[in-house]
Image (tube, rainbow, N blue to C red; front, side, top):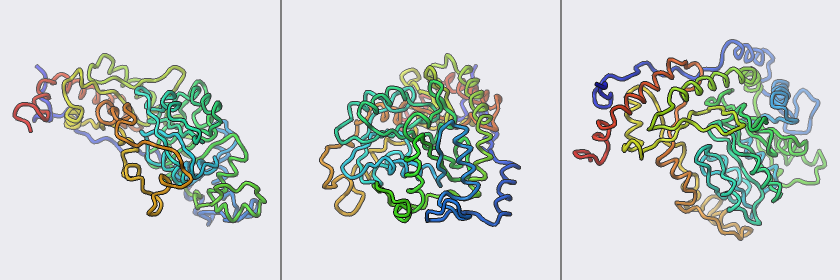
Length: 439
């Protein structure tokens, strides 16, 4: 006889709370004190002063983080910024895109991955994603290309690398710039190459929710010295500096204050040394959980493409309502009652947001969508990217419970909760909306 579901009044599988995701400790505290004792919390100067105590390139902690990041990722240049959003904006500006241009983006990602195009009055064009990795589908990308396309933003969503070889081949064929959004994929690899080193730019997040973090912050990587300088200029008041550098090409060289502080950089330097260990912990828990869930009819564990390593920012599974006969929302409510938190979907496909549906952003005329320089036709209609919409509405479930300090015992709780719920599907069907006696 199976135990009664907690959602129906039974005893939950798990009652203890999920421990917080704390990755900082004594070394980070010492790094902060080192900066405080120096008396300088930032050493950026909004002028071309590369060798002065206050520098266009930032202080010693910022520059040390950039050098250490370059060494860890095996890339020539790393530029620290105050967020991955800033990094995406700076990288997009460095590509030279502008009014009338189009940028291929994913609809299934954080909003900045597409907004970075609109910052420069370019038009986001959404291509669909793959159902297994949730990254851009190269066939959909090819179908959305036009003579106005100038760049592609590739998102390594939830920690799994996008299929970069065909995307890069397409970019080379069409002479397009490629920005890798690696915010959720620290240390993930694709065919022996670390994500963020394959496209023209890689953008990493150091937000508090990420595998490694300094509260807020980001890093932009590139192999190209001129592209790196363009990112540095946009980070730090470019319009002032380009004259001092006698720059001939000043396209998009309106600068911002995207500068990272010395405290953030000092913390990030320590966190970078923890990356391999933190990733190993996630990989071990994910592998154990995947092994325990083999044969589960209701949920299909994460797909890992050949030649790829997953960073497991989130542990994502495919929910099979066709096998359970239970709506995803009801299934997840039952798991939550058992003490295990899963989320349905990731984000609403971006083109369904008001900014795209109303095509209203800059001024009352509605630029960039109605910009007189744009002569294309772009669709943001529901149904545009059916895979992304299906993932969000029906198929995708995720949990963040594959991270430190959780253990195999916590994974066992997840398995027990799933097994309990799937063993009581008849009871759960009776609780679902639309069942007899239910509204």
